[in-house]
Length: 181
Image 1 (tube, one colour):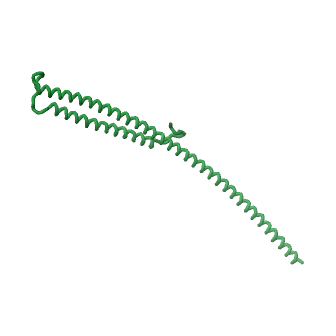
Image 2 (cartoon, rainbow, N blue to C red):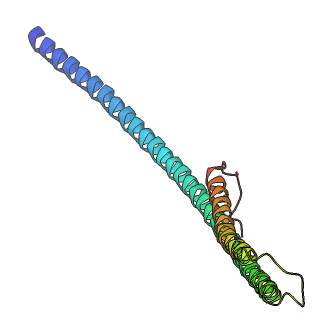
């Protein structure tokens, strides 16, 4: 009888211990599930924050690229305008040089005629044709100078355009600035 009671009390104690262990394990599982849910929530918030920052950075990069492209387009238009002006100036200089060369040729012809006819005008020394040689040398020098000036103008304009493009690409991005027109 006592033994039966002891067995009964032992079974009750074992059942109580098992119940306590079940309650403790259930509480631990519930806590672990809450922790996992909190971690998932925090991870989702972190991922959303990363996505927002990535989108913001992408917008900033696109805006900077748009500013660069707009600045380079503006530089290209300005360069084309300057090159057109330089070409027009070179054409005007060639026309003026041509007119000057025609005038020099007329003066050389007049000098040769007067040298051939010493009675009408003072005589010119007949040691070759110094006026013709001088006119030819000056004409060629003027032609070469025109070619060099045209090349120098185009090189200067291209260099300045390159500098403006470089400056546009290396200046720090302006915060909250949209693309320039």
